[in-house]
Image: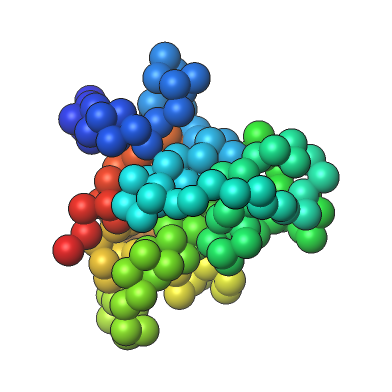
Length: 173
């Protein structure tokens, strides 16, 4: 499996919640699991002070502090103003958007041109709201296409892909 080493590294870095350690990492990541792992990576990187936080989502437990932190810092948004849809699979374009915001939150790079000189062959299927993030993550080599120069934006993002991209952000120099 291509991701075995990176999943092990993600586990060693405490990015993976214990309840996920017995799952098949090739499965799709849910929106909430993606966010929990993103928060854990961010906490390892920056040591977040956990305080009471809130989020506006009626379909997520109010005690979900990880999600609230990411929401309050503009890293995640809901499917609507009050719905997060936590158990839905996260799509590749949703993942790219959150990863891009997370990357910029940590590293505050100069906003530069994304790598659009070679667009993905399926560029026309990437949602307008995700396009800049998709190419930004390509530029920083955090998240790239799948094969045949396709990004496949609507395809679910797997747990192993989640861990791999979070490790890349964590180790970015």
